[in-house]
Length: 64
Image 1 (tube, helix red, strand yellow):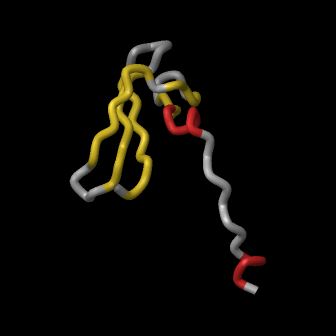
Image 2 (spheres, rainbow, N blue to C red):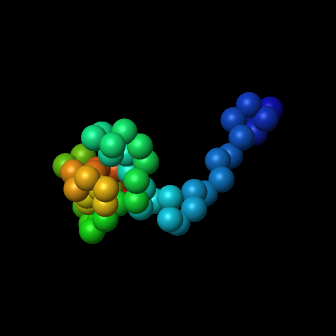
């Protein structure tokens, strides 16, 4: 019953983890010069910059 209502999610591809949304370009972009950091609340995040316009891109990855 529970498995029918809430199907398990498939693992995302590895290269999907290095993508983030650029607010200036308004599209998904590959994160250039990305570094993985841990936020104050203990969650992992990826920081980097947009290869097109050079603005900062930030993506929250999940719990550490």
